[in-house]
Amino acid sequence: MPFITDDANMLDDWLVAGPAAALDNTSEAAPRTARLLGEVLCLWRDAAGAPQCRLGTQPLAVQARHGYLWVCPSGQPARPLFDFPEYGQPGRRIIDCGGIGVAVSGLRVIENFLDMAHFPFVHGGILGQMPHTEVAAYQVQVDSVTGEIWATDCRFWQPRASAAHGSGSEVIYKYRVMQPLTAMLYKSSSRAGELDAIGLFLQPLDDEHVIAHTLLACYDDTSTDAELIAFQHAIFGQDKPILENHAFKRMPLEGRAETPTRGDTSSVTYRRWLRERGMRFGVRQAA
Amino acid sequence: MGECLPWPTCDKVARIMSVGSRLSTWHPVARAADLRPGDNIAAGFAQGQELALWRSADGAVQAWENRCPHRSVRFTLGQVVENRLACVYHGWQYAAGSGECLHIPAHPGMPPPRNVCAKVFSVAEAAGMVWVSLEEAAPAAPPRDDAVPAKWSFCRTFTARAEAAVVREALAARGFTADGSSSAVRGALDGIDTVALVLDARLRLAFIHLWTDAAPGSDAMKALHIAARVLRSGIEASQPAS
Image (cartoon, rainbow over all chains, first blue to last red):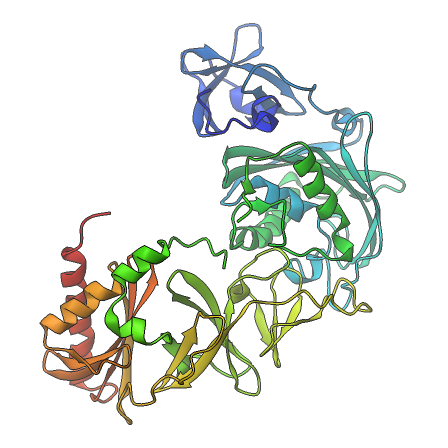
């Protein structure tokens, strides 16, 4: 294998390699390049409109779905790509917020995405606000059919929960981890009874670097695309310096190097879920 | 203690550490006046250990492993709250002195588990500097108070991409002498009386703290700044490219 890891959790899965729209006006002679697991892939759309991928002279399995390109490095995916039913639902706006590089293990980025306790400290005045720091108990389960992690009944007090929210309220969240490096969150939307969906899809460059792609599938009748993207960038811009200042860039899964607390149920479940599948990519080896 | 900065094995450390620093296990990591009570958190380095240096509101100096025990985010991004250090990520608060976690904001009604504790190093102030010991037990003797003559002024801290032993050799070649019991060497740079405190911050990176009898703002002080840059250039030019 040419890639920088032999972890089947990476090689035998579908990994995001950028937005599908990036293949507009490409051809085998003029492909787009994307970095993945230490290699540079060539991607293009053939005459029939199907995505194609090559590493050197070797063709790789690729599909365009949910607005992104997904590559399976080994060509032998252990499971199909996750479902994303909200992507095609009428009335939802689909907005690709672009890719942002982060110099840390992608596992840290997903764990941060699942975490509410940092809202008042990292996103103060937006996703949280002093003195509303308490994380109430919530439920975490692993779906026995899909193997996905679901955290439900999450609620947190937010002064300005999205571009469409003007004032403070308790916001309901659901989180879903589909793969080690992809997750979704669902939260109260501007439309009664409906939840906005936000996807976080990480393109792994190596054990300590990812490109984080964020996709909105949301209800919002007032904000412009630029305003919605700017909101996500503002949030991500607050997380990025924290994420890049972990003393260990890779995430420990065992031992006592890091100590969780009661409200870290999502994190504890995610780390155990990774441990049980023998995750090594992006993982700090026990001392 | 699990830090990820590169540092060689013990044998290699023993080989490259100078006599002066082997005799003293106190490492001069920062100027004492640069840590203000209840205010800033400075990053420090000693032998590959990354440190968060700060002062509680009551003035006591602190040297901690630069890593919150919760998720390993650097403490230097946090803030000092009275006599506690609060992590930037989730606001967990740790007590000056013991490093014990006193407050987890996500669960305000729950006393933090007793085993959540920042790694705390022995620290002392002497000769206008903050000194840290990385040993489990603090050295029996405090750092020497006469490493820098009284009334001298701080010039600057500068780095050199070289081992501290190489820096000391370069200073010795310029006539600097050690008194043998502290990591200070004394001599003159460009004719200006100077004390240099040298330590291995991390592998092949030395920190040099310069003190002088020149007055702040004087022509001699300006000349010493220039002499320090010349010294560093000379030292680094003599090093193999890495």
